[in-house]
Length: 159
Image 1 (cartoon, rainbow, N blue to C red):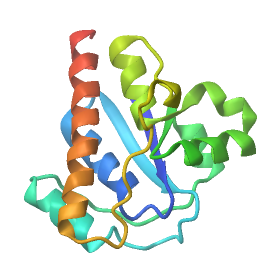
Image 2: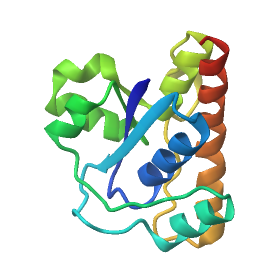
Image 3: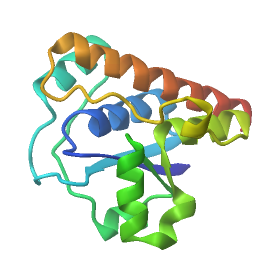
């Protein structure tokens, strides 16, 4: 079982959403946790995140956590929501370079054995719904769900 740590900015929207989706969809193939580069400890997931996940039948029990050495050590891979998040982590801990990817990079790497980059015109960022209405969160959910579903499906093919 691979241990995946999702990282975003505040750990109230994208990374807890990705954590909940992966833990729900993978049925034990992966174990996921999440953290934020600038997270204040103990905040709940945003109301819109909880609402969208509830509507999709995905449970969430979340309080925000800052990125810590313990979480990094726990993880096999660290998946960020943006290229900027990835660069921040790699700059602070250069030895982690081979374990840190954007979510999009990791899914493409695992499903096609190729690495994507911004040079081929693809954005490596997952859109940030922070402060938006529920429809914006639903779009972010769809983006993350498609990526995670693709990853889980490919992983099951090869196990």
